[in-house]
Length: 78
Image: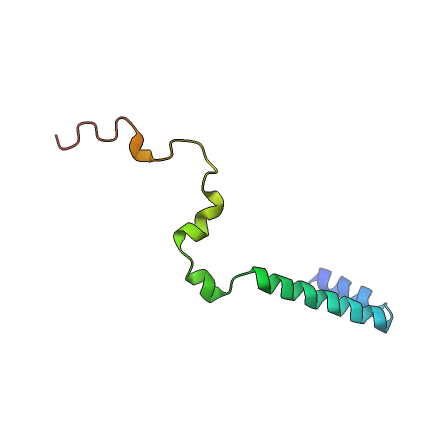
């Protein structure tokens, strides 16, 4: 058990039983909230590259399409 877990447990044990139930209810609420927002392993495996990298799209500067560079096709096929 981590030191933080031990500290949480000691602190909760000092509370009256009603307060302990409230703590448990809150922890279960946080767990259910996290499960709703985090995709499962199967869902993560089925995500496309676009879905995975969407947070980074538009984060940098530069041309929208790298093929618009003037030298892109310069001397192609020579």
